[in-house]
Image (cartoon, rainbow, N blue to C red; front, side, top):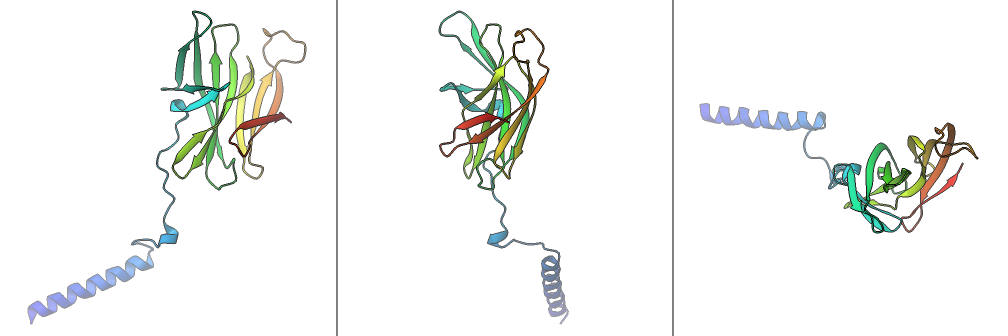
Length: 186
C-alpha cells in the first residue's frame, strides 16, 4: 500500500510538472517556433572577397601580397565599422564593413564590402572603391531601401591630395541580382 501511494504521488508530481512547464512556455517548441540556425558567425577580419576581380583573404584583419610589378607588398586591412541589416530583401541580417588597401605607393584606398547571409553561411561581394586617402566615418544599412549609406569625408574639388579630407559625402551602395555591390553619390 505504501509503495502504491509513493508511485501515485510521483505520477502526480510528473503530471503537475509537465502542466507547469507548458504554462511557462518550457519544453520543446513546435517546429514553427524553431530558431533559424546560422552555421558560422560572420567575421570580417577573416573574410575573403574580391578587389578588382582578384581574391583577397584576410587573416586576423590583414592580407599581404607581393606586388606583381615591383618589390613592394600590397597590404589590405580590415577597418571595421560594421553595419548590420537586410541588403537583399531575404529577411536575413547582412553586413557591410570598411577595408583599406595600401599598394606601397602614396595612396591608401578605402573600400566597402558586403557579406550576405544565406542559409549555409555568408557570401561576400566585391570590394567597392570609395576613395583614396579619404576619412571613413560610418556605414548604415537601411533595410527599407536595401542599401548601405556610406558616410565619409573627402577633399573639396581642386584641393591637393595632401589636404586633410573635410567635405562630408554620402555614397549609396546596393547589391544587384548578380551579387555585385554597386553605388551612386547622394
